[in-house]
Image 1 (tube, rainbow, N blue to C red):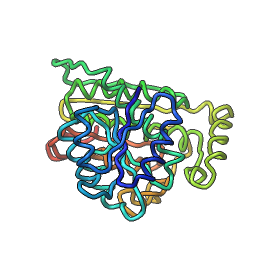
Image 2: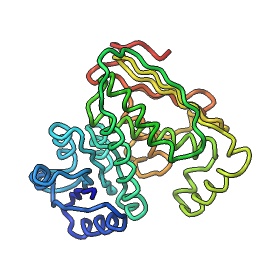
Image 3: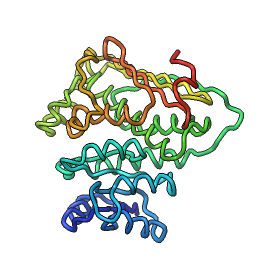
Length: 305
């Protein structure tokens, strides 16, 4: 049984969130009214994941995220964001939260996001061995348009990060979330050319178009190419799709709080928050992401090769 600690000062919102999670086999919600109550409950009945509101009395979501990262670094936290909490949500993501779900989209995205974050977090926990003598790894993968292959691939890349000791457990989960978002974007928006605007207006039509194009030429024949290089100071990931690309200059600023609830910017928002450097090529079909060792800056490391 997977325990999900829901932290919200609104009894109605707690019941709503818990009810959404109960629909999925294996997810068992437990509850706290604020951050302080959550911190008292965690050592008594350690959850597998925390889902928290941001604006609460006693201790808000930002303070809760910071404290969990300090004392329970392997425990992932997902934010529930409401209109007006965008700025604090950005800060919480920067301080250690693994993902977020706008409250207006809870019914559609909460359980899905919980399962996705748990998937990447547990993949790391099962692959935690450290090889002390390893100084550099480089690997290349070719991925079909199969989302089910993403989790094991990300788990493998997490294992390499662990070997290099580039970040703590919370950092590993955040990198894994960024990698997953980039790979999903490469498949859906790159190779299959399905717009995130359609997801915002008609999720059912979005899913139908994805399935249609996965079995239709030329979309089905396209691949995603991943090159990963890890050293003792940084990890670099280049992800390339075979789609038409886009103009990177047309992208809205994903770190602007005003764009937090726009579906089209959610993935890039997480990527730019969790990675130290993000570069798009001119064609817009390749993203290069750099994660540096915790505590180091760009001046301490070599540039992207």
